[in-house]
Image 1 (cartoon, rainbow, N blue to C red):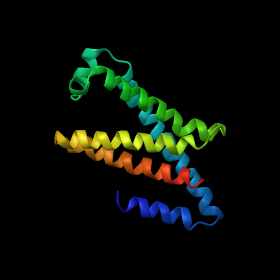
Image 2: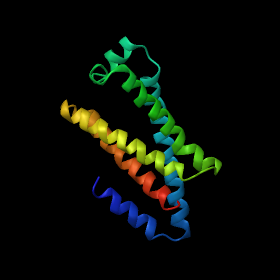
Image 3: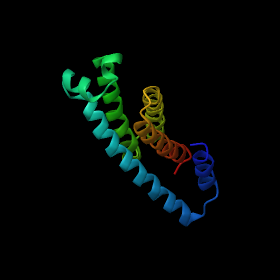
Image 4: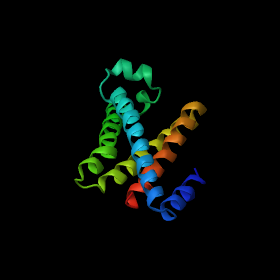
Length: 143
């Protein structure tokens, strides 16, 4: 993660017109993939019944079903926020804010999985944090 942010910063600062277009395409592709991921993850937390949530997520019982559903709704809204503001041109500043908010949720997921020594899910969440940081930095800088 530490090397990702300076690399993204370098890409954003040192670009010519062609690289800017390529970076824009990369941001759209990453944003789209993240949005699909968070739509699936949010839907799996927001809509299932209580027994299904408790069976699927070990932490659901500890934090409570309403909190689990809230995380799911936040992921669904964040997924829409990654795409719709920039695609429609209506308040495009909301796209990097959505990425930053999802990043905060994913940092919490990393901590939760690391406490339980679930290194596979923790590693996946670290990768999501890096991708969300890329999108947030790129969108905040106007890409």
